[in-house]
Image 1 (tube, rainbow, N blue to C red):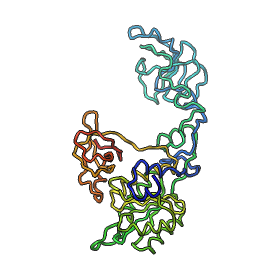
Image 2 (image 1 turned 90 degrees about the horizontal axis):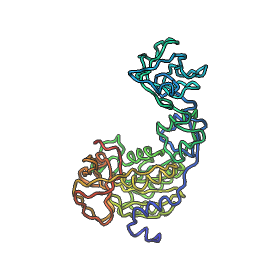
Image 3 (image 1 turned 180 degrees about the horizontal axis):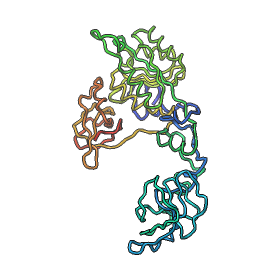
Image 4 (image 1 turned 60 degrees about the vertical axis):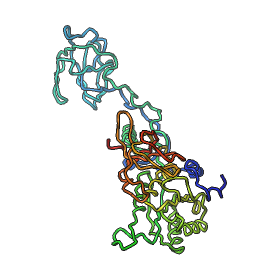
Length: 422
């Protein structure tokens, strides 16, 4: 398809994503402290500098033993061995354990040399709490055999020195941060966060603190888009509303470029009535790659570049703006952030009859479990202006191109927006 065809025909969604991602490059790296790393993206593989755990230790409160000493133990014929050491967590054993001896040991405490298993307190004649005193020299009665390795965390069980523990592109969660902290790392190399400037346009928009007058509406899109940018790892900045004049649109767009963003997103101003304003500004300051897409909701969607900065012109209807962000902007934002994260898809059975106009449709649905499958029900009206349909939605059910009727019972893919409630 030629560039001209991109401008006059409805572009396929998959082709649109391909064009958007084609020339995008991830941002550069920076070092940050691990307490700031939640939600950030690893800019390089992280290699374990030490093994974890760095020493063999006990996985439970009990007694360190030589496993072969317990092979004949039973309830009817217990064996008795002397307690020769008490090993709390954080203290290294001073001597090796000899055959025929046992040592009381706490969870996480280093295993003494010579011991190769830990027998639980429950399988002995002792019953104690962590702070209780156990007299050395007392005899421990063991009623069950234990196998070598039982109750022991070996060196490198979690990670071996030299292992890649976190791959480049991984988003840091609490688990990843805990892992690097356990390896003694206080900072990590992450990709810089994309800076995204958000513009709303239209004479009908008023600020949140002003009372509504006839024909006016509050600017909700810039706030929902800001939160989506934050949710997916970007740093959003809101510009003043661009009014329906060339002077206002030019001023706001030039102001956006002055902040050196990595991406610019506008909402409204791309439908047929106001398209010329945005189109003319894009012609002055950059270029448009495509203007219409085979997507419902969200057919009027622009993508191009302003001074080489990727630009998305999203529809003004609130649902259309959010759906097109999820489908088209999110992959671009994740690529800028260096993330290898992906959309979370599943399948669900349609619980309602759905009709479409033949475009690829993203229906807002709730998900409930029925046996081993999800059942999707429409959240109500699918009007592109009904933001409540997104508030209620667990997922977007994807109806393929040219499937104009979906009967109940049809299995279709769903793009998860959140963890379903049931």
